[in-house]
Image (cartoon, rainbow, N blue to C red; front, side, top):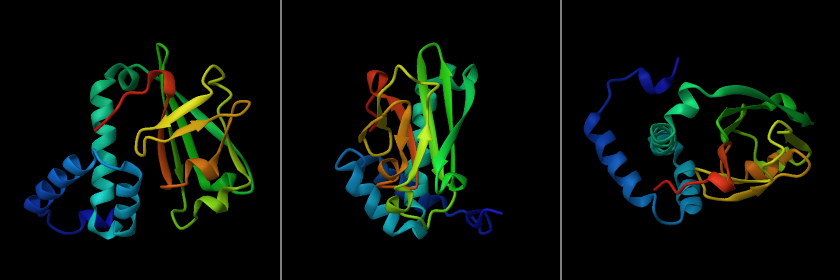
Length: 165
């Protein structure tokens, strides 16, 4: 059970939080997300990431409605601690990668790579959450780079990346 759903929702706090998130998201995304991660108990980071993904989904409906779902494989020491998949449709892609253990930091994943050989024509990706560019190497992405800021990433090919604020 999601612990956030065990108590009544304070809608006024959520409205205030969403307003703050949408106004602050324009400035220093990485620092902003790191600060929210430090205070994860207030729910701001969960709301911010959900808001970004829902906005991306609204702008890319066909990718979600008709897109193909491709499971990604990880290789290395912590391959069992990663879940990843790609949504693909008509030349558009979204890659979601999640650490299944949020207590692990990026250094923990030094010896673990994500295989994205199904996306060979994309070598550079951009994280929708942080705005960071990530380079693939022979169909693989380094998980210690992906998880540098957060234990989750939403990557789009840099060629088709769009700014979400």
